[in-house]
Image (cartoon, rainbow, N blue to C red; front, top):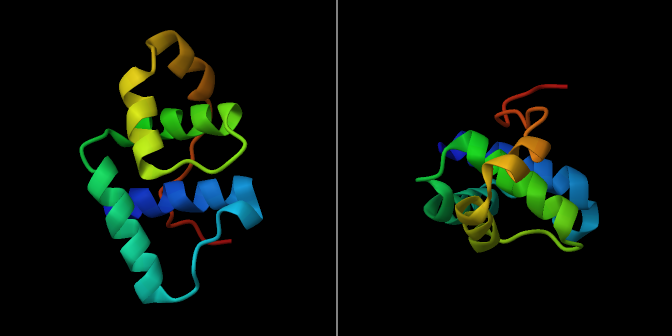
Length: 96
């Protein structure tokens, strides 16, 4: 997974959890967060990470950590993954 894709996941998590998962406006702070998450998720296929994040959103009241996403991806079954894989999270480069 690329850093741009990590940023897309972070934006998606932010849009769901709002005040419980805020991304900083400061570019240096945001870069540090992206680098940290990328460190955990870089070896994971982006589509599998999308499924893991959606699964955690359904199951958890609080925002996931990078480790949560990594563990969720490792333990996800194909049947469960299909239920969460509908739709795309985007790659973080959308403009509105």
